[in-house]
Image 1 (cartoon, chains in turn yellow, orange):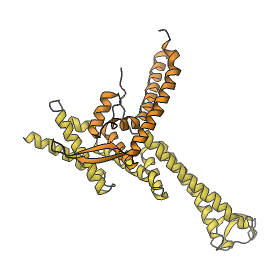
Image 2: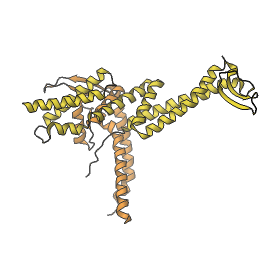
Image 3: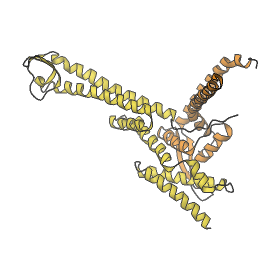
Image 4: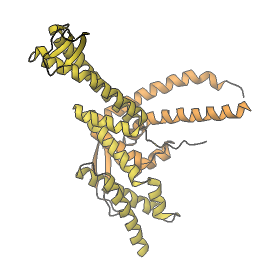
Length: 207
Length: 126
């Protein structure tokens, strides 16, 4: 009988570690996952009764709780990112990709570079109507030699405003365009990763 | 000197390719399992193992179900088992049934094309 208690204790020990690693998920999701796994383990125990190894062999075949939790968390974050369309959720998804795959890391770097280009342009386009003398591509004639400035300046710019009001459509189109491209690309990468199930451990059957 | 090394390399490359191909089928395989009746996780694992040679781990199948559910392809419900502990059964939704039929049709087309393409290979003498 103590054997049975030991078995149940081992199961709960495993599930406890799993719960801990799943802390990012909603409580309802976590409870569901734990219940499903508990049911799964108990079922395997029943059907594989008599085979050597017992509960420890079954738990070992599941992998560590941390590995399993990682699969769940990745799936959760990526699914939320793919369905929500909010840039914040998508960025969360990209960060998750970066933490689980090298290619994901490249996607993160690329996305950040895209935002680094797109956001300032967009800001410039939005700021120009309000502070026209502080925004744009200017040749500053006050300094010797003349200097070139592109961006939003704290002090009023003096010299020649090379783009004038063209910065508004330019900033809007290129800025928004870049940001939308980054988001689209991120979504595509997330969906592609989900399809690939890159952490799949498939056992090739040798004939 | 060179031969054994290259054959080992190409065997590894073939394995890698095979794994990629199997990954592509997995979603279709899992959805197809649910065609006749709802199953719970362990049943799906066993069915896959028995009817195909796609052996996957629970660490893969449960998150996969989670995603399929989020995409509206499957639905789940908890059912009290005779064994005392409840089981989470998965079944195809209407969308899921349409999707798996479309995927199966695409798979059939692809496999017929491949069969045609591979016909000459079966004539190769040893």
